[in-house]
Structures are given as C-alpha cells and as structure tokens.
Length: 91
Image (cartoon, rainbow, N blue to C red; front, side, top):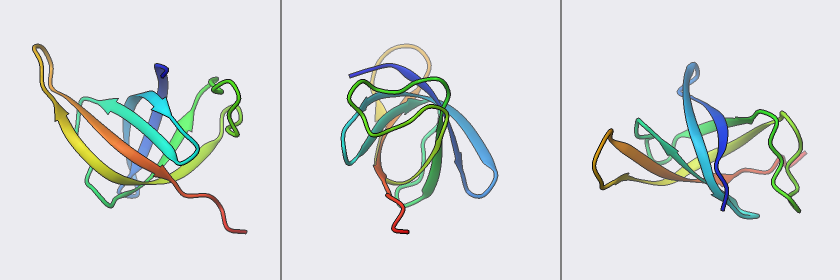
C-alpha cells in the first residue's frame, strides 16, 4: 500500500490527477475524483516516486488499461477507484 501522486492521461488529451494507493507486478489501483471508463488506455506519470523493490523507475510514463472502476462510498467529495493493468512494452 502507498499514497503516491500520479498524473493520468487518457482519451488522447485529458489529464486527471489521482493517487496510487497500491501496486503489484500486474498493475495499479488509483483513487480520483472522476471515474475512468473501463477498457480505456491510459498513461500514468509518476513524479518522484518509486515503490521500494519495484521495477518502476523515477519520473517515467507507464501505459495501462483500465480493467475496473467503482465509486467509493462515504461522506464528502465523490471518490472513484480504478484498477489499471500495466501494459509492458513488447519491444
């Protein structure tokens, strides 16, 4: 588990700021104030954060696909969480 800022670019030009709340070898779970569309391709940019023991590196962009999304129930501003599968470069 973690709480790292991330910029998420999707739909070609839209940028949304989110927080990565956990990660694994297969992907990321993020929280944001707006929902992402399932199946959307996204680019995640981590600014100055590298999870300990991770294959990620500093200030790089990672491509992923939104696999699921849901609204987080609770008081206050609406929050949405999304599971993003990391798509590794095949080159």
